[in-house]
Image (cartoon, rainbow, N blue to C red; front, side):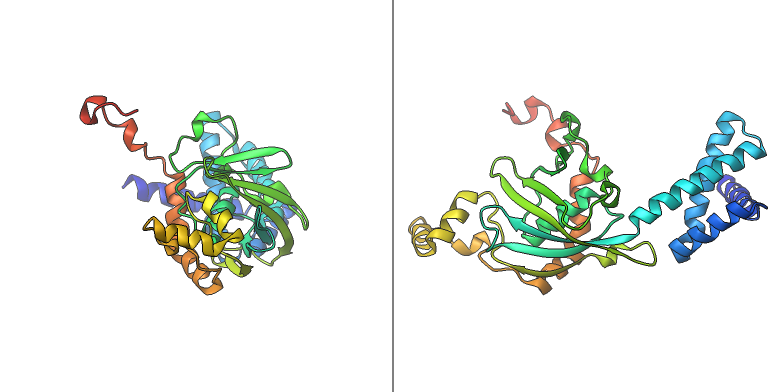
Amino acid sequence: MFKDSLDTFINQLVSDTLAYDDSYFQANVTKLHKAIGDDFYAYFRHLVEFQTTRGIFEGFDDEEFMKGVKVLLSHQLRDIKVLNGLYSFRVELVGHEEECWREFVIPGGMSLADLGYMILIAFNADGSHLFDITYRGDTYICDAQDQYDDFDQPYAADVQLALLKLRKGSRLDMNYDYGENWQFKIKVLNAHSVKHITKDADMSFGEGAGMNIWEDNHYDFDRYFIDPVGVKEEFEENGWDVQEFAEDVYDKDQCNSDLLENFYNMKTGYESKEPNFFDEVEEDDFGPLN
């Protein structure tokens, strides 16, 4: 009953707000509607809900309520101009820039962490290690163990790509797995403006070349490029299979299939607020944990 009554109240408030008689306000509403399309009502309702909450706690009158709505609306329009677009990236594996590289497209409204997940999928990484991305001297961190509170750097999932004001030729750097130290050079190939705010479906992999990384085995990966026959023979002598280290070269179709299947699984794994398993157990349960 409470939820139904609240929905009715908010819907009426949204309707009354949209009908507010002010030419500048109505012009901005039209711009927002044009920018967002079918998602406009839900977007505007969220804005009204936010201002309503503030109004309840601060005792706004009608004039103060509408003043806040106008400010929020102008801020949204300003951000939409930035978020509304697609970025094309070229990513090269450091040390093998000419041999191992990928190109892909991602919406500007997605996060810096999302860019990292795209790179991990592009190089067939497990996504089981901490990574960070550096841009203009600032380093943004992302950790699957949800231990990022232990670091001083800002969290990459909290930073939208487009708000970094990337442009053609911008350069970022990514480091994955601090033990193995897989490093990637990231270059913005282009920034495309589009008519409406873009959806996740606009993410896609394009051209690329070279092998996938060998998770937890950077040393042998580098050696393999110098002496593939010798490394294979060494693996065979030790009873190892070099194929287990993903010798396959980049496959655009497979990568796009992996994107659809694995992106949100990886995103959830990195950004989940669930505690680490070992934070929940007592030493007596398993003996010393060191």
